[in-house]
Image (tube, rainbow, N blue to C red; front, side, top):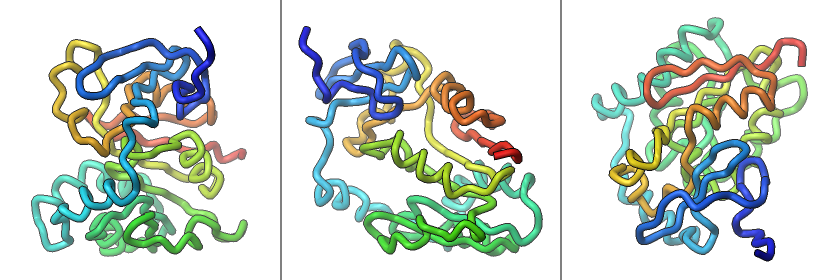
Length: 222
C-alpha cells in the first residue's frame, strides 16, 4: 500500500499503524509507542472544537471539580518543594487547577489555546524554566501530541515534574465499550505502554498514579 501521511503516528511519527477499532470514526494503533488515534480527517475544526469546550461548566467554586482535579494535584504537591513555579497547560474555560496549586503556595502560569492564548508562558527564559507542568484532560485533544509534549519537556527544569491526567486505553474489547472515545474532541488515546515509551524516550522516571494520572520526573542531569 502507498504511504499515507495521515496515518503516521502523531506522537512518535512512525508509519504503518494497525487498524484498531471502527465506529463512526476509524481508530489506529501505533506499533511503536502504542498510541491509539484517529486520522486527521476526523479531527474537528478549531471553531467546532471550541463550541464543545464552551459547554463545560468548570469552576474553582465547584467542590466536585476540585475533588476530580485532586487526583493529579495531590501527588504533584506531595513531590514539590514549597514555592515551586509551574505551568498549567490547557487550563480550560474555568481555570481551577492553577487556583488550587496557588492556594498550596506555588506560582502557576496558565496557557490554553482558546481561553488563555498568550504564548509567552510557553517561552520562558532559560533561567525561569518550570519546576512542574500539569496537563489535566488535555493530551487526548492534541492534534500533534509529539510536538506539544516535546515543547513542554524542553521548558521543564532538570528534576522537574510533568503531570498528565487522561483516561488510559486497556485493550480492544474494553475500547469498544469505552464512553471516553465517544467525545468528538478526543482524538488521541494513551495506554500505560505509551507512557512507558515516553519515559524511555525522555530517560525520565515514570510514576503511574491510579487509573488516569502519570507523573514524569526529568533527570536532574539534563
